[in-house]
Length: 138
Image (cartoon, rainbow, N blue to C red; front, side, top):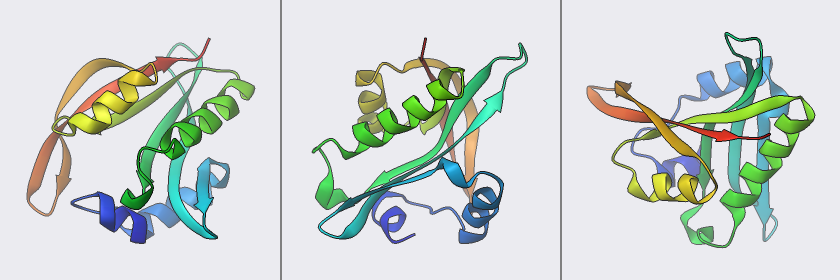
């Protein structure tokens, strides 16, 4: 929660995070530096309409003091490998349309922009479009 507060305008309620953790605890990955948690990824596996599996990144946040040193890339790579081992063929995520830095970051990792979800993010009277991005794992 502390890391997310430094990174996001609206944070995910702890109750939502705990509910997902109870369903998919293996999807919680943390990065540590200097004996403290400095980043995290929350993700899970989904079965698509065609029966194939896909990883889904629900949240990725890095303490701003630790940006641009490869932590985000390491978390995505770790999750990608776990998804490959589970026979997932792709990795999906949604990113705020106005978050140009995140969109560039994911593009550099091989994610492609597929679709715009209008008003996807709705929190406390605030709405913003999301862009669905996909990275092929095979």
